[in-house]
Image (cartoon, rainbow, N blue to C red; front, side, top):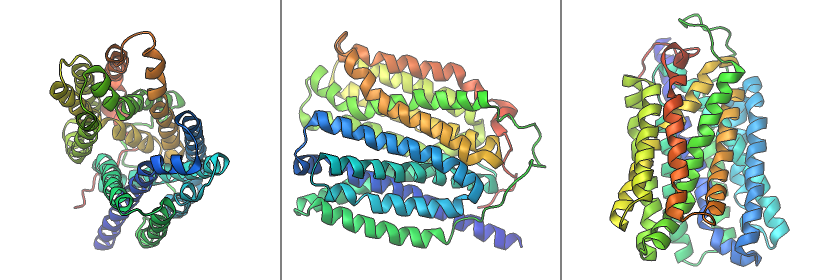
Length: 397
């Protein structure tokens, strides 16, 4: 019996890695094709910016829908459908011939991405509970790896002159195959009551979930700033060449991916509160270093330190929300992920207007302050509160 459970858990973990990797790859393939699709549909940067809001709106709606559905039906049912929807929808922007068609395509792609995001994180919590040790950061690292693979595959396809419809069509077909294979390995849905092994009462109060969501908003706002403003910072503030400036985001993303590979081990030894407290503080230091850097090499180091610091923070919040109440894991994850996603969208939008008042390097000190707010609030994950509906203490390899 124990061997059967162990095999099932290992299969469930492999499936979770596959879906996180797939999600990162799908969204990465859309991102690398944005310039080509923008030209094909005849829209400008400003119009694209408005259309991207539909992607965000669809994702937010998908997250809100997927949470309760996952709690009711189980991730084993919701996750494959979400992955299939996201995989099929990634083809649609490649087929769009004008702005309205692209807007509808992005709304559907966002819906698929949002449902996939919540359902795969809910299943990750289920796997984590079975293993009895942190795994969430490693799953998020797989998402980052998927984005890197998409960048490489997309660059190869574009270099060969393939159309977006061709490349994204192949991507969609491949995603359906991966979904069908991985779906068979997902853990069964087992409705849970109060955890008999828990040593403390559940702290899944609406107030605590709101705090976790607020912290996710702040942290992902900082990630959004790094995504959109790290390259312009080096180019416009420090006068770096376009090639050197492009390394800024690469340094941030690479450090974040590598950091997530080690964050689970650190969390298991020192606790999630320590990861959140030290990580957000290190992130603040890295971003301050980048913002005040006198030259490009120092700025690149600062952006890398920011990525390393933030790497394990958001996964701790997702995990805490999922474990807060096993019967409402999907809904709680959707609340935290949804507000966090809004933060990701808000980051670039906040910095832009600020640059009309102060230079870009000074505007970047705002997210530094937000990181320090998270540092001060990291006690939300301290002690028994961090172990809400604690995972079973069994450790499985």
